Length: 368
Image (tube, rainbow, N blue to C red; front, side, top):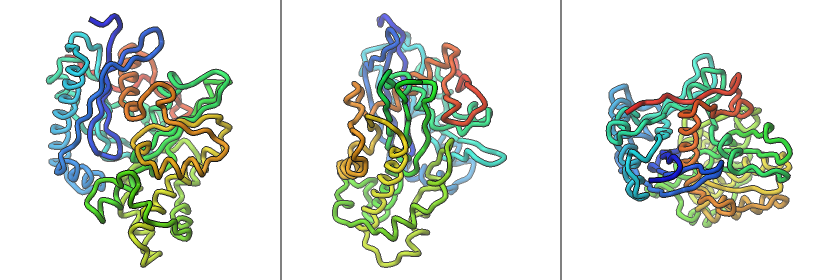
């Protein structure tokens, strides 16, 4: 039996490649990662999710996916418990982000929709499950995203040192952690992380991502294409702001490319990589951070990391490994922490990040 309560965080991001599960505890205001496990999505399920994210599918398919993902999220929780040699009685709660298929944070009827039925997770595990983290923040006038900056502030902030955490998933986001005033922590989605690179690579090669940035290495940056992409209004939009694959997707690429015919596949891939780099670097340039720490799947793309490092000469750039946390598990761990916050009736959002009217307890608790 663990001396402190343990939590499971379940996360699947905008890359839609599978589920990350982290078994964590928080002794003495610190953090201990006990075990991890990943469940890749089957190919057909992944393709269906991509279609749903592009508004291709009706209520029957949404319901079926909600059920299937609930089963997979429950299995991920069971596997990570086995990896940590713990039983359900030793887990205080599960925090399940679910799989986002639509995120529309602006407009009169804003919403964010995640699939992965938490009722099924509870039935499979017998553990209280907290889900639907985003919509309470949105009901309070916020964007419901990004939610990880509150976790970043709690565990990566350091007095006397200005830091930025850059999460490069399908969408990239920045957390600004000033060393002199933690209450001024902020964050937002910068735009595409891996989403556009993945979409272009998959469309032309059948591979879900550009492993090690090899396709991008074969190409050159097309400055006219890059400038056209950077003219998208999202990049000039003031924070709070968040986005997703509803906007940055293959159709977005093809619309811009219609104005730039006869570019090679590799040149487009390299330019998409530079779009991610430039939109992150432009925001970092406005922040007086001594250190920048990277996490998310983009850390595994050496071409991307090298280009970002070159674009940010006045920043020291490392991965969150330097802070004691594997960059792959930061987001899953964050949702274990958010589950703890909710279970203990503590708030989980940062209004300065999301634009909500105030701090809120996030999510709904599904009891066993």
